[in-house]
Length: 349
Image (tube, one colour):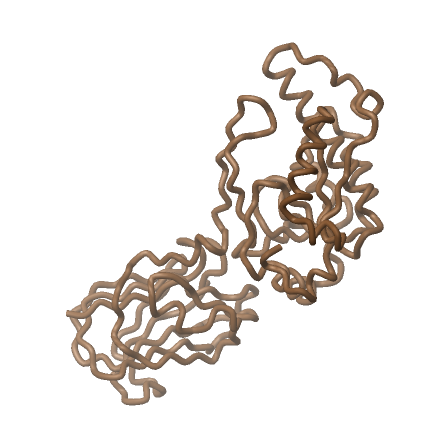
């Protein structure tokens, strides 16, 4: 909620589904939320949903004994039924539906980023994912909620919703996963709703984690410029200065695009480290490109004396070079994805 402006709060409904089979626990949780966030409940930003009559809604789930595998199967079946009921109850509340859980954190700009992603994505999408893990952070059209819930119910005894939603979007002719990286949500909980099970999974693409650079290095003062389109939440200077931050383009890069670092004075360099993408070879890397070193005062001609090709989105070279005026990252082929330059670290002799 802290990431939503006053105007954005008019566009959102948060449905808290209280899925515990113990009614006392459900009522206690609802009371806690009402007391902590009275204005949000009063404005209907937060709404509560309870399951229907337990005995009718959860068939064959009453036995608490059995082997661990049997308990897990019942737990999964109950979870599937809970998902399906939540989906059905939310079908008429909004244009889009985002599935979340209570042990998840979000970057502060998640809502704006989701709206921008919807605008930029072709209209025939079924599911857009804003976290890699499980059934969290999945966005659907509300018109898909009932048929998705129906498939989850049809398969509730043998297939987790984590897998069913994939089969659903494939059935609807979305051929491949649409995972937006860096991701906007992170799973922070440890304890599963299955008694005794620890769930320490973390999303490797989470936006906040990605801001940490490998080197905490004092780069020499420089002017930064680029011919790439800029995501102004992640400007060019962020990949060059400080211990956190990165540069992100707003559109896919093209052959001939450059990212230019023009030093304010000549530099004697011993090493240059450049990482694009989330990690080596993964997530919005520079697929085809070179790193160029130049001595020209404006660094805009072709008189580059050293050229290093990117491998898996990275360049890490140890050099013995004096009087370097600039370094340039040059794209050598069109690519279909946006580009993240996570870090540029320059080491002086």
